[in-house]
Length: 187
Image 1 (spheres, rainbow, N blue to C red):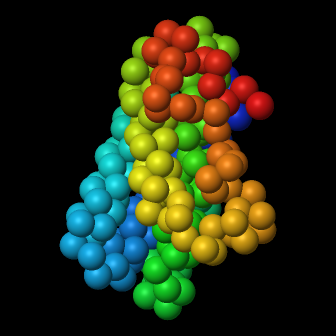
Image 2 (image 1 turned 90 degrees about the vertical axis):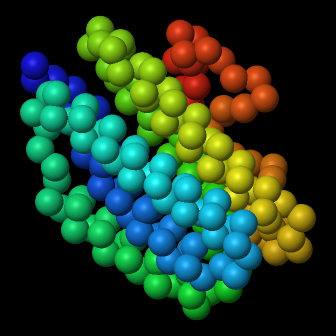
C-alpha cells in the first residue's frame, strides 16, 4: 500500500533519522556523566531511541517509504556533534536540551497517529502511542534531574521549555487511553 499523505511520509522519514541522532547524542551524554545511575538511565534511553528507529522502520517498509539520504546525513552529523559536545558543555546543558528535545518528540508520534487516522489507518495506534508516552517519560526523567537547579529559570525563559512549559500536552499522571489519545498534540 502506498500512502498518499506527504506530511506523514516526511514525518516518518524525519523521525527515523532523528532517532539515530538522539541515540548518538545519548551515547555522549552517558559517557560524560560520572554518576552510575545517571549513566544507566541515559544508556536505557539510548536503547529506547534505537528501538523507536526500528519500529518506525517497520512502518516505513510496510508502505515502501524510502529512507531519506538527506535526513540520515543531517541527523548523523547533528547526533555526533551533540555527543561530542556533552563532554565540553558541563552537566546541566545536556540534561536540559535532552529534556527539551524529548518534549518535542512526544508529539511526533501522536501526529503520526492523527495522520494515519486521516487515511483511515489505525493499525499502528498501539506502537505510536507507546513511543509517544516513552518520549514523555524521557522528558520527565531529564526535567527531574534539573528541576531544582539555579540555571533552569534562565534556560526556561531563553529556550521556552522547563518546569513551567512543555512542548506537548501529555500528562503521565492523567494519561488518556489509546482510543482517546487523538486529543494530544492538537495545537
